[in-house]
Amino acid sequence: MAIGDSFTEGVGDDLPDGQVRGWADLVALGLAAASPEPVSYANLAIRGKLLGPIVNDQLEPALALKPDLLTVCGGGNDMMRPRVEISYVVDLLDRVVDKAVADGIHVVVLSGGNPSRHLPLGSLMQKRGDRLAEAARETFGKPGVTLVDNWIDTELMQSRFWSADKLHLNACGHTRVATNVLTALGVPVPVGWAQGEAGEAPPRERIQDTAAYYAAYVLPWIGRRLTGRSSGDGRPPKRPELTEVVVPSA
Image (cartoon, rainbow, N blue to C red; front, side, top):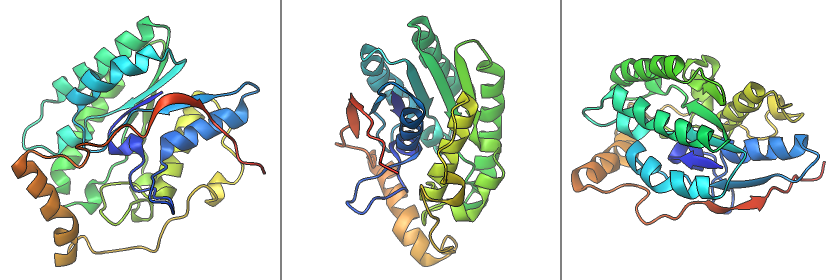
């Protein structure tokens, strides 16, 4: 089971049919490839969600499906608001962990990749992200929990891993995160991922300091904030039921 926002939904890893893939889909494929038994996977993540709605709307449906493994990542959209309490974010994540572990579910808590060097007001995001990552390290070192700290993955900070909006990972970046998760779980990474077979980075784009970048990405984001809208409004979860993962033939 995967719960979260755009990071877990897979935004930035676009497929030819207009759908998105993402690291959680790739982790499911990796788990299925390594398992002698069938592996089922569901993903309730919806882009644009704050952590409060993620916990309130996604946690109980996820637990009701009685998974063996639950991944959770959230708080990125909270961090982009004018004010955020780091303790509030950590407490909500801890609520997810405690409820899942109490049900006998192993929890993977992820931090997102660090986009701060590519973004306007990146220094503010860096400070907030550093504080959240530090608090997560202190809080989630407990039995039944695996912490995957993508925030400190310096290679993932490189621009080749990020999509044109510089906020979401591209296919190559999502593959990098999936590799981090499988490695943390002690699961073999499928052959070829290191060579980019699971996702290839597009040509480097440097539009973030231009009028085109602000028109395409920044101004629409500001417009949604001013009107109380979210990019995920009206969107259903991408994979609401546990369904068996089909591993492509070699």
